[in-house]
Length: 327
Ligand code: F6P
Picture 1 (tube, rainbow, N blue to C red):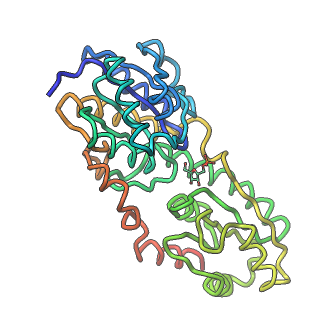
Picture 2: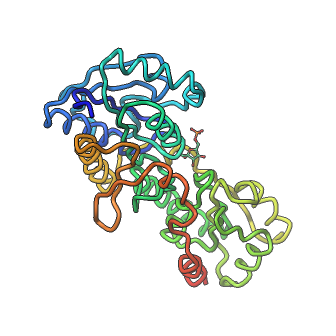
């Protein structure tokens, strides 16, 4: 195996708070181990276009607390093609980058998985997504910040909901995953939580609201954007028919969930995983994602990390907890 001298680092897919802390950790670890480190701008698009910047200690100073990603991010259609990936490899060779750290979610790792099998270049992933929908890590970088953003917003909604005796339907992010909705819903004491992994449907939702306290006029329903009913506005329409006496409002939290200063949990997770990724590359690892499971830093093959989201957290025990707490 070639000795690694220059590591490329990129962020790809939806951004997540803590990505900057992860970039910083990769850069600082690379320098610590006497390696060069090159930033790739705008994810795989930048790789294909040869959009590279040299990075040093100073280029990652004062970013640990910043949301977003200083390397910018994108979703690349070109990288889904073999021609695109060939060009990316050519650019890496030309720049003498001999290993890659990719920070992103399942789309990022799908590309990384292909790339690391097709070409002779080690690739390690860091789980950077607010959705937390990756196996091989208890939490992804950005999830903790996002759920705290949600509970801060919904606590405010709860104030006005209670003043007006209103039912609020709040939509949170999670196109394919209900993990943001589940935890934040428990955290705000939601009367119902609607998630794609356990669709309750109209009947289930109505039943849940009917079992709930009749004397409590204000209610909060948290809906994951990927829920079967098709988002908060659709849920609102359905409930208006079923409960004409409720004063119903809908609030879609949207991209505020992706921004903001990362929480301490996310900064520390990103920092630990960033250093682990560089050490993993030096130890000869490739085609894997670094993660933290039960307090242990581990590596999980990309195809396992991206294919097992259903099993992750939404067990019957969690659903029962939601049911008990919503009484
Ligand atoms: O980052 C993941 C995610 O937040 C999904 O939950 C959401 O559906 C998606 O990003 C939306 O991202 P964009 O607006 O960038 O397409």
